[in-house]
Length: 528
Ligand code: CA
Image (cartoon, rainbow, N blue to C red; front, top):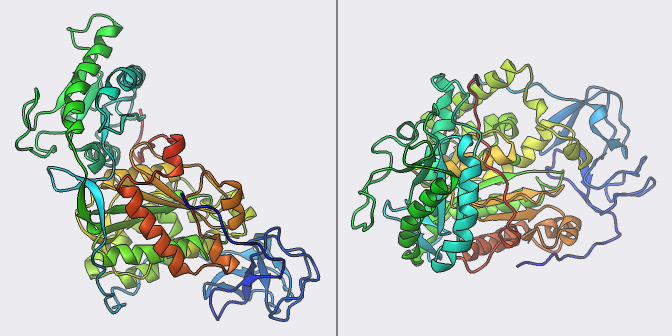
């Protein structure tokens, strides 16, 4: 497990991202006091907290405040050089319209393929590869969650020790299935999310469903015939390709224990087959990585996200699949995204997803500015424009070759924009549905986020966070701000850690402590 490293220094350190920028952020832990002389010549007129911006020159009223080379806001008053530039001094720019965008205009020189990197994974009958060997119990409706959880506790204590090659048993609890307008057009989002999660590569194709009986989301609606891949050479009590369902309202069940025993009996068949799975050496191209951030600060776009972006490019060069998401956190960068699309069709799909999300937010009488949190602002991020410019960096510089709507399953290699809300749990749930087998999560404020279904590698943006949360953070990208490591070095460290974690040679801290956040569905359709 990587240790927090990098020494703190008392010399003033400010970070300017782009040569056009007229502000820089203060990197020193604890910030810098009033009167500090910066190398740029400016003398601080205020105490500037860590991660917050300082004006490098005099800014007139209405002048653009430039970070990442673009206006993140306009000065509401004259701001003298050396001032603390906080969110109360800035007017946020309007969102870029979705018309007249540059379409597939950037044609980067292809980076050389990255060959020879492998990991030890579980090859599935459908060709996908798992990084863990987990029995997942799918549920059609929240009503069955308590019974399933009771059964899972017994499975873990009574059955799992007999199947040493199986890592875990996970009940896929969720709030959907009944009390919802299931025929509303947008119900396709939660339904396909649940369907595709049950087919995640870490579950080995062993789909098992617990149903109540009277719910709207009936098992054959959740997983219609043909949605489960047909599997050859499979020996077991279940017919090939037939959905395995335990229905609690079935007349055969008399008493609670009869339901629990039924779930355990069905689980045993799946555990037998999962237990026969063995890791084999597979190319790094079998990784399906979802990247996201949560609890961001002004360092996110300087340290952790650029390192993840470098790693994204390594993965694309290795032929792997990488998804970036979080629509409200990339909306302000739409022009650079459509420019990086490989084809006009990919660019149009991105615009379609952004337009849909704009309308979704407008229906709730808000816009993308509803995204930022008190913690983001405390960490130095003035508004969503500044946050988005730091967030989008996770996507690296590779061409964007594919777009997924929320809950869709990924079928291609390369870099994909998987449209999701930025909410950590909803984004993670949708990336799971897309088929993610490894999750990378950056944080500046700190979050103990973890999922039961896939390993989550957490990257700290600051050395101070990595030091205090030394047994929760897997990688310290704060070394980049400290000057003790480069973006490339941390990117390579992350890449190698990913291969170790995917192989099961290393566990993430979230796995070590069994920190599991709930699956949270995105349901844009009405409930009844
Ligand atoms: Ca997030």
